Image (cartoon, rainbow, N blue to C red):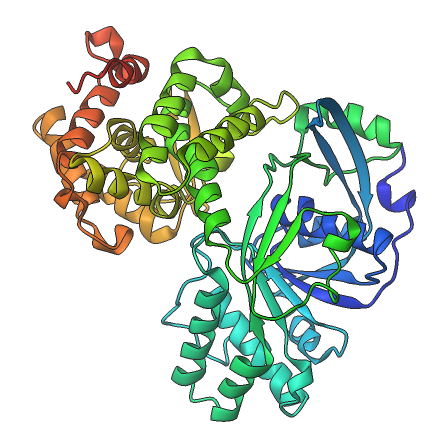
Length: 507
């Protein structure tokens, strides 16, 4: 079978969109939308990707000339839908480390107008070591600042050459936060005042919310799908049919980026707070709350979670008894949205690996579940049991198989049953867990008490001391004890611990 690049001809168009990130989500969401906008709304623009980390997919993407296939499956208007689409909206992918000057030359392009990104929840963060002369800067905002400075200088501050940023990172006010950090770097690097004024006046940093479940490369089905497509594609990306992009801005860019005109579910608004709160706390919150315990119990995919009575009941308890009661708004409407989310999770065509959801779980819990946990406690005066247990399961998930040995290839290795699994997060988070687990305690109870307190009092992680929440420290401590006691030793084990949460027991 011929390769995709030997079968399909790429389409040369102006590179109007710069994309920081080359992973599955952006390729199955943003680049898929741009491809449709080119076809149906006359956008006539391509995406040029930037690999923001030293290790990535640039070589694979360029080997296929930017071509790849999206595999969308689900239920739409009561009918099963399965759709393969060859994406021809990507022109190339540059490595910001090995092709730094070529990457910076993009800043001089008069065609460039939009910038999208997905550097995970931990990506829009300050890097104190970043300097303008770095090639490149370590942080994403640092890279953006240097890129914009190059553009400002090349076009002599022309206000018409400002860029529109639409970050897809799942943090509140992601565009506002990115702008704040760019201006901070501009000040710390002693860049011209006129540059900062240009950033604020000529560039638009939109806040955005993205919603589509993207499991990624369908390894087990790849041969059959390639046969159906008629070519070999090593970059297949599977996703659900449902999609939603809410973009918050005071300016109107909808004609420049005609996604809605192409029939896509894209909403331009001046206030996205309702959409964000609902999606992050219910859909993403359910994922992050459920996955660590489900994985430790022996499950591997979201679909398995929905078919497992105990895990599904645990998710439902968290959603309907804790997350939704912690929120403001129409309760019945929120329950309807949660029921729709559960239906999406059960999509039989989406093999969403639990391990892929565990990436950067600490920052994800803070963003997705901590607001529900604290909101519930504020209303009820006590910690929510399912969410508290999910935090204990998250802590247990981060236990290295060999504590004190440090990371290898930027990750820790955990142990489940007779096998191992990768633990991936910010290096500082991994180092902290490795050190916590390396300490020898007199008993499992002492270990649980120490680690629960150390994690909950880490203000750098949570932004507050979580031991102030009534009952949370005890709940997490007891949850850890239950998770760490194998059923074969007369203790709980993961599944018995979940059953205890469902029955209402707290010991």
